[in-house]
Image 1 (tube, rainbow, N blue to C red):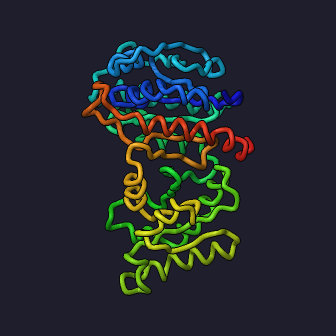
Image 2 (tube, one colour; image 1 turned 180 degrees about the vertical axis):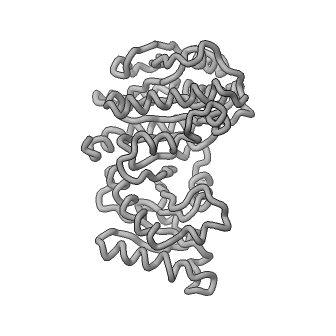
Image 3 (cartoon, rainbow, N blue to C red; image 1 turned 135 degrees about the horizontal axis):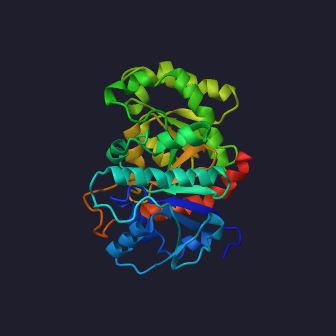
Length: 337
């Protein structure tokens, strides 16, 4: 067993969703304890309900601080956050669920900022519950950016050997082309290179995906590649960055998975999501880069429709824990914090 295992703070997300179940299921995998010392931020009543729903008899051990986590297979170490004294109704939006999910995250962030844990691994929150609880934030990203930004935060998807950044995220499809500007790409490329370096990739090569079919065919199918993307790539090259593109989107993700590129800058949400989720729907891991610590997450929602049934697939959480265990200490050292 690795003697230097990172301490991972796990937040179970909204207690009415599948987060508690994917957490207890994932922590029944002995392999997790070979690479990390997990500690769960939750309420005991929620963990007990999740174990019952999944038909698991894993032991629960309350600890008063992360350093007390033993990292022993068969035991879930947890910090009792003290929000709930009984399980909320599965699959129901509620003030209590929103407040609890936010508090689990808030406590884990505080522990990471204090150096008590090496990374944070999150299960999904529910936006409606957060709104009902009036906590002042609508999702994980908003909380993390407000509390823990070091550089410009960016989402990085990891699926197998494929790594995908996103230039734009949650905007209507009609607005995508206008949102892809030279200054936006100029700002994003150095961060992408920096974050690949934080993962231990020396002198990384980044590809920028094209927007139009066949990369625009020299203006036949659109001019964004000629007028915006290619000039930004050339400016980055002149600054010494190893950047390629625009590379047609129907080939760039395959080429990156094959090793030609260390990462891809996807121009919009579905362009990168489709590539990652087609490759590994259940196993894609979301990393938030640019924080004062590494954060990984499952790439799915609260799935209220199946919550409490014990049938949720836990591969996303297993992979999120494995990725955090693999990179947490290295990222922490490279951030020089």
